[in-house]
Amino acid sequence: MLNKALEIGRSFDWITPVLAQIQNVANGPHRTFLISGGSGWSGHRIGRMLREHGVRYWGMMIVSQKLMLTVRQEQAGWTQYLLQREGIPLLNPIGSGHVTSAGGRAAVSRAAESGKVRRQGIVDGLSGLVDSVADKLGL
Image 1 (cartoon, rainbow, N blue to C red):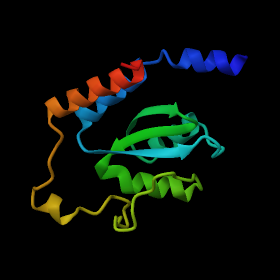
Image 2 (tube, helix red, strand yellow):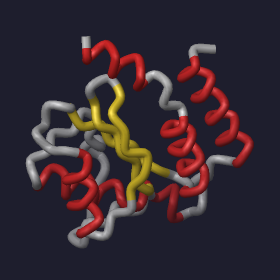
Image 3 (cartoon, one colour):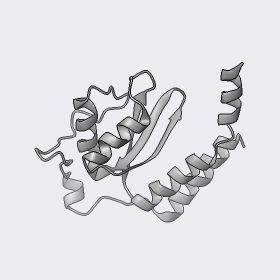
């Protein structure tokens, strides 16, 4: 009974996804990591560990028994290293083609070096925001 009440109450939280989408647009290229809800780590504990290592994250929320958190693309390799070093299993690790440097920063791809990385435009970001809100509200 209590679980059903919590599930119903959680469905009314549309503010968190909207804020996450706004932060995605504001922060530019980003990477969202998914962590199993049964990992034994709380969001608070993971957040504290990441902050202690200089990782800025946003959009931390639980969706379908998975903890989600988003970081700037530049810090994705470092974030994955930190999470895996602590034994936190990732449901969507960065592919093996992604190389991190000794300092933990993601290696810059040739496309980024040549300036071909396209930033998500504000119109595209707002469109994604509207779509996200509509999906959350079931419209």
